[in-house]
Length: 552
Image (cartoon, rainbow, N blue to C red; front, side, top):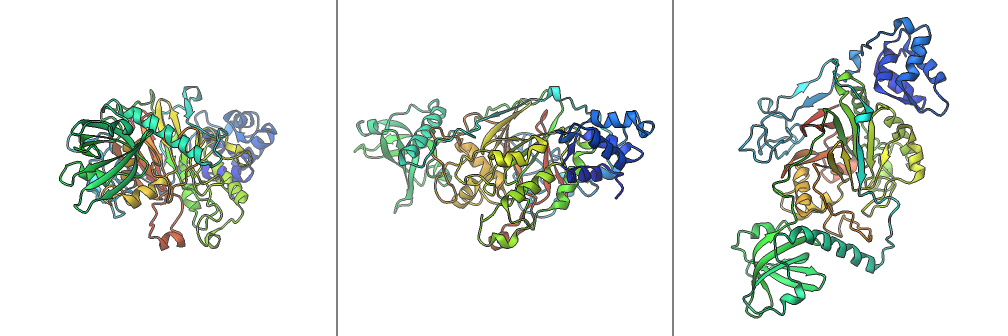
């Protein structure tokens, strides 16, 4: 097969165990005989090289028969521009009633009534309204003025617990984890309330004003339709009554077990209960002012690739990686993957009937081959998900050395789930998202649903914890520190897991659930999951505007 296009060159290199820098691929495509140039570049590269660089290719082109054919300014082939993918810009004028999460525009401010570039609540899977969104289909690749300069890059990973796990599952370790959760989240609330310990409140005079911070131990309705919320701190528990006619009663249906909240109210005459007047969540301050990069640079946000599944969308993946090699994608210097690289084995009933690759290590070998199609000069960060070969209990450590060795060709940064990745001043909280199942199951549909996954993410930001409720779908690994607390507010919150595309702004934090790269499986049909597949949100780090590209 002739290698006249960058996409074919990338696939040929991947089949030989190599990836390459974008400019190196472009140089090979511009040679008189790309196949011969590629072979010679591989032969002359150092034996331990897994990535072809510009210098490797130039050494061949400048010194051989292709030298005269190599232009001083490479002209990339338009065939590599992934003609079939469409872009959805975030610069439109969406409304909260927008029906389509797959093509909705992302917000840049919080209040849709005050700005033409307002946030949206995405939902549904129906065709978009053209006059609202301005969807365009990208054509041939165009020249880009962006200059990739690795010296300007900055990538810092925080909250990585890989190799630091101390949990053995003993009861006292769970106590330690929840105590740490309480101490850290209560600090966020103490500026708003004058907390008194539960034990001390019981000794106060009836009718006294009371402020209490605690973890939610129980929520139940009374015969009269009021709500009884039991809060627990380090000294004990105390019942708090929210009257049904209080405005805050609407907030009670947002409560999850084990989350940390504060209440203010009045102690009953017998000092046995607190009548609640106000309810506070740790929350993101409304004054939060996000930081941005100092230059124009972009990151792609993807998740749930599921290599090894019969429904893995290889063609869409090829279209995506082809596009990454075009001049249009030159500003995309980072790729953040939020878990589920592979389909895994034994994750759900009868999964073996839907596997294309049945061995877990072979699945990662296959994933590594697909990853080689990504330009070799991109920075990649990945966290595990519930289909990956790590423990199911969260926090999940990054992949072990055996799996890391399989994926060394691209030198990706592998960190735990969750982790905070600061990319050129922009903090991205990466969390795979298993707890979203719990949030969606427990909260009213208007506040959290699979069709609008970003709304469930808003709840996690409000609670300042990525997985507040223990039990059900959520497995917790007890550690000395609760790695699931959101200590610092991120600019971006990136999740996956639910295979739905949705995004929006919550108090100036961009919440993005990035869909998947797997078509609907029989298991998903059985549980009514209709995935949003083959999308890649592209985030401008200098403006925090986002464009969603479709590659199917």
